[in-house]
Image (cartoon, rainbow, N blue to C red; front, side, top):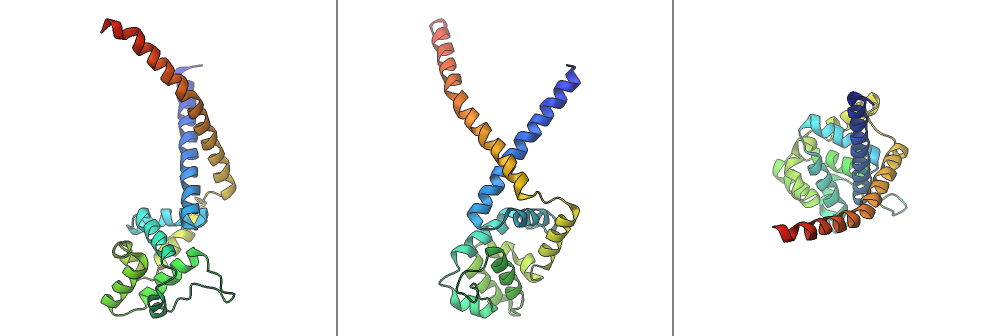
Length: 193
C-alpha cells in the first residue's frame, strides 16, 4: 500500500468513527427530547442559518416538555392545547411549533416574553428571533434541508449507531489490557528513575 492509500483509508476510518459518534448523539438526543431524528436534523441545519444555537433550541424543547402540565394560564394565552381530542399529549415537535406560533401572536412584547419564559425557561430570550416570525424561518429551512437531501434516514442513523456501540465495546475490552501493560512498563522503569 502506498502512503497516499494508507492516508485515505485512515481518513475514511476517521469519517466512519465520527459518523458513528454523531449518530449515537442524535439518537440519544431524540430519546431525551421526544423529537424524531429527522426533525432534530432539520433544526440543526436551520439553527446555523438563523443564528440560534442548536443547544438553545434543544434546551427550549426540554423545558417545554417539562412544562406541559401546570402552566395552563400560559397555554391559554397563546391558544395552544397540548393534548389531542382523546386526551393524549401531542408530539413535542407539534407542541413546539404551535407554541412558537402562539407566542408570535402576542402583540405586547412584555407579555410575550413573560409567557415565553414560563414555557421555555431561560432559552426564551435566545429563541426571540424564532418566536418573532412564528417559527416560519425555522420550518422553511428545515424543509430546505429535506429538499437538499441532507437529512439522514433513521435506518442509516441506526446502522452508524451500531458501529458506535461496537467501537464502545471494543474500547471497553482493550482498556484493561492497555492499563495492565502500562503498569508493567511503569514497574519495569521505576527502579531506574
